[in-house]
Length: 175
Image 1 (tube, rainbow, N blue to C red):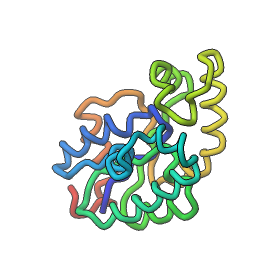
Image 2: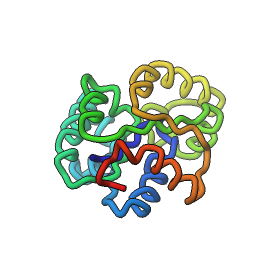
Image 3: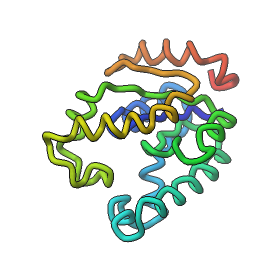
């Protein structure tokens, strides 16, 4: 089974995913990086040219193909679990962990990188928390269907090992 990380942009899916893959001895797949590689351009460029709906289709297709790869730690895009049937698909093929980070912290993490984030590209700094909060409300039911929720802001290696141990029975042969 895969270990699949979901959460809003800036929640630490890629950063934590790399650390988890090292601890577990599994490959790491960053869906955003993989989709940019497949498309031959950045997500922002693709969305600007083809629109967010076309991007979501590409993202859903990628999700369906990567679960066929060897068991991995997968960092999804922030909106990936909200596509029709995506969360159920992920739960059938892995353990889904929701990385939950408070809005002020997300805004702090994202404030210097909004230009590369299609959903935040035109948001003024003073509106960032409000816009992030609105997106989180829309996505709450998607994220809420994850198998487990982790809500710490930072994790030591020992804390990660304890978290993995707590979901080890679900990962079966992984641990």
